[in-house]
Structures are given as structure tokens and as C-alpha cells.
Amino acid sequence: MAEKEKKGFPMMMIVMILVICCIFAGGISYYVVTKFSSEKSHDKAAVREPGVLMKVGDAKDGLIINIGGFNSGRYLKIGLALELKTDTKTQESGGKTQSPEEIKIQDSVVYVLRSQKLEDFEPSKQEQLKELIKNEVNKALGKDVVMDVYITSFVLQ
Image 1 (cartoon, rainbow, N blue to C red):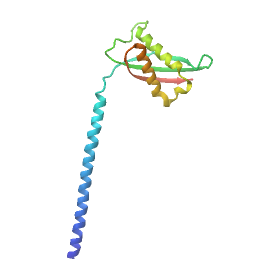
Image 2: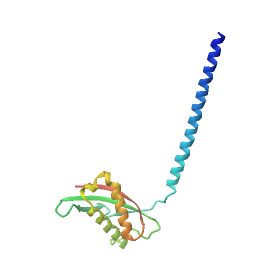
Image 3: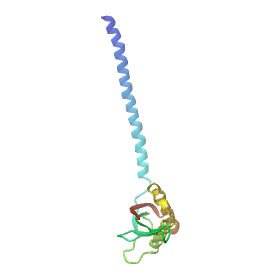
């Protein structure tokens, strides 16, 4: 009987060491994951402040554009909102006339959309289209004003 107790003791000791090692490894893993993920999310939050949203086109319908040439019979109805930096003087006018910046923005957006081929409007290419609109509007205004482009509605017929 004494031999069984001696065999049981080392086995029990090995099991206890394994359990303690697993708990220790889990604690270290938890610390590392929370430390790095909190740093990444904190960096993203500190990147920029939210800007002013400006709707492009008609307030109700957005933009309705003939794409693919005059005889194609294909139309795009798209609602766009641009996030502009708050320190700029580009703001929506409350009256019926548009400011020169709004006209330049709308002209750039229409130019980009009309110059695209039908295949460029696939959902997989949406981010490229948004980046292209952002770059063209910034180029037309002569400075980096647009922070992001949001597509609020999209109908291709």
C-alpha cells in the first residue's frame, strides 16, 4: 500500500504543475492580447476628429447620372455624403444658390462617376470608387478637405 501512495504522489504533483502552468500561460496571453488591442484602438481614436458632413446633389434624390454613354440607357442614382475637415470654410449654403466650393465638389463627383465603366460599379470596387472621388474632389479644391466619402444610396438601372 505504501508503494501506491508513492506512485500517486508524483502523478498528483505532475497534474498540479500542469494546471498551474496552464493558468499562468492563460494569464500571460490575456495580458498580452488586452495590452496590444487597447493600444491599437487608442491610436485609431486619436487619429482624427469627426468632420462636417455635406450631401452631394439634390437633398432628396442625390445624383442621377447617365453612365456608359448617351445611347446606353443606363442610369445611376447615387446618394453621397462627404466628410469635410471642420477647419475649412466649405459649408453648405442655406439658400437656393450653391457656393463655388459646392459647385466644384459636385462637378468633380459627376466627372468621376461619368468616366467610370459599368464594371467599375461592382460592390467589390466600391472602396476604390470612394477613394477616387475623394482624390478628385481634393484635387479640384486644391487642398485636402475631404476626409471620407459615404455612399448613402445606390441604384444602377
